[in-house]
Length: 180
Image (cartoon, rainbow, N blue to C red):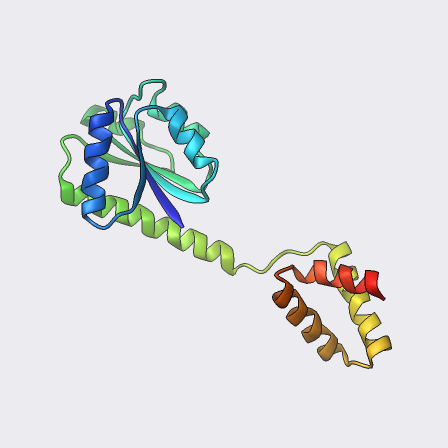
């Protein structure tokens, strides 16, 4: 899930923006006034958007941006003079005063970008080490020899068992090697 966090120096501002986003169908998990609060929240999250003011109670937006995981993007809401500083690929910018429609649209665009990245990352097949490959081959050999399966049947057996047990194919192959 992609999370949205709002952080501004005045908690009332953060709550106001949070309420605006929530009213427009964007799920916001928190409104904060410090960068430390945001960093604590991001430790437990996979992907997200941080809607931020230029300066928080304890740090500048640039410091917070450095601490954010790579799977988080930041939307900086600040006066026009700070637009020049926005040259990071994970940083988006809206100048003050903002229009509600612009804010909603920009957050949705960032959300869509992160959703695409997340989906793209999930679709990549797992990269197996040579040791993992040998473990799977060894488990297949045992199934072929002791159970009289073909290589395809042994492969499908390992796949099915790994899905049934909720483990990776390598872990299932290791279990087969221990059992036999």
